[in-house]
Length: 145
Length: 152
Image (cartoon, rainbow over all chains, first blue to last red; front, side, top):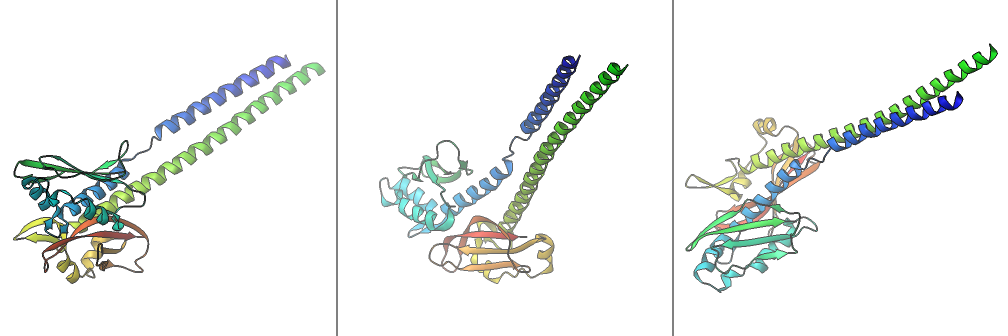
């Protein structure tokens, strides 16, 4: 009789433990991290940064002017703004340990891509910035990681 | 009769033990549940605040009092001459910026100057920043700065 009672007790305890574990699992799964706020904040940051870079004035015009001139004068010094952009980015604009890639795609002539580190898996992308060149439209992308 | 009483006592103590164990486990479950709920509320709070201060940053960038405009056409930058003459002491800005303690722009590259756009109280707290393009009309040149909002 006593053994039967003990078995019933253990059985009930097991059921209660299973129910509690199921409940905790349910709560844990429903808590999936919401990254939308982080993404919105980072997107705003990336978009403003790309806009500021493209408007930035170098010795002979803005960065966007350099893209246009590079298309017209292939291989000229206008196509390499890496050093200027790099020193600008490392002047306190980027956060600590943040890397970036500035990519010039499509009709950008021989404009060199600029990067510090490589953004492979997780990165934040700014909305593309378009520069009208003589050959069409150059698409500039910024990735932060 | 005595044997029956003992059996009854045993069954009662088993029931009491089972109930005690059940309530202990239930209590532990509740502790976990409230801990998760509390963390979740904290996350929601910081998400709402981040959204709100992002809105403030966007709002400042788009204020006509500060934004660059060329022959009536606006551009995505802040005009430094407008920044220098801007005064955020008007009561209108207190209504707009509510619990913002300070808004300022810091220049990067060569100058490193800081312009206060708005200040209420000590001006200290949590800082939200974003890069901005700065236009210098006298030199017809663009620089880069950081727009920051300090909140309680």
